[in-house]
Amino acid sequence: MARLSITLTLETADAHDAIADLGRVLEALRGRHGDAFRVLERKLHRIIDGEIAVSPPGVHHLGEGIFTYALPAELSECLAEARRLGVIR
Image (tube, rainbow, N blue to C red; front, side, top):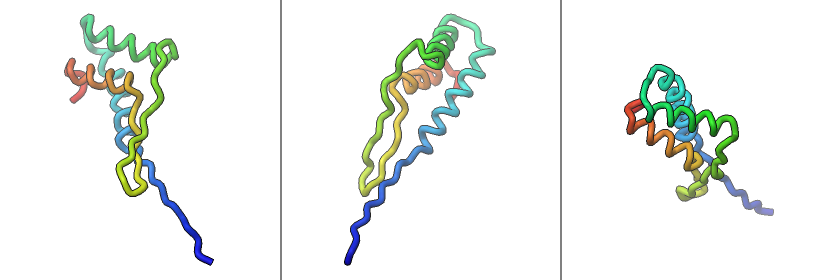
């Protein structure tokens, strides 16, 4: 008797790298001065402390049973802001 099997793959490397970037952002913000840096730092701490709710992570189908994990939008926005401020590249 033949058996049907399905293989699904969830790629998490990009999300893992982004989470590591968030850690570097928090570390780098300690040495930065200015309102924009403080706003970003406070927002990240409020997310960590659960004061700001984050949306569920996204899962995107890449085809052929491969999916990728995407950070919640709020964390992606923090990374974009950190890049805009020059905290990370």
